Image (cartoon, rainbow, N blue to C red; front, side):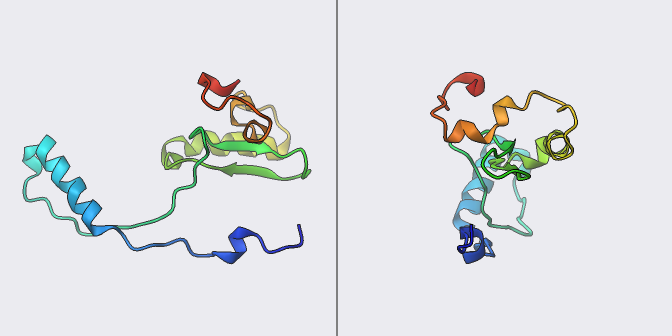
Length: 122
C-alpha cells in the first residue's frame, strides 16, 4: 500500500483521437442514414475507457480495505447508468439500504472464481 500505484504512474490518459477511425465511423453512419451526407465532424476526442472482464461495473466495498468503496469499470456506459450507480455507491458509503441488490456489482466476483460469463454473474 506504500508503493507507487499505476494511477500515480500515469496521471493523464488522453490520447489523440484516431482520425481514421472517426472517418470510418462517419462513413458507416452515412451509409446507414444517407440524410447525413455532408455531415462534418467539428471535434473528436480520444480517451481511455475503464472496463471489467464481464463488462459490468464494480460498485462495491472491498473487504480487505475497510472504508474503501469502488465505483469503476463502466465500459463506456457511465452516462447511461451514472445516476443509479451513483446512488448505489452513495448507499454503500453511508451504510444505507442499497437501492438495488449490490451482489452483481461486487468487487469479489473478479477474484473469487465467479463465472464471469454467467448471466447475472451470481
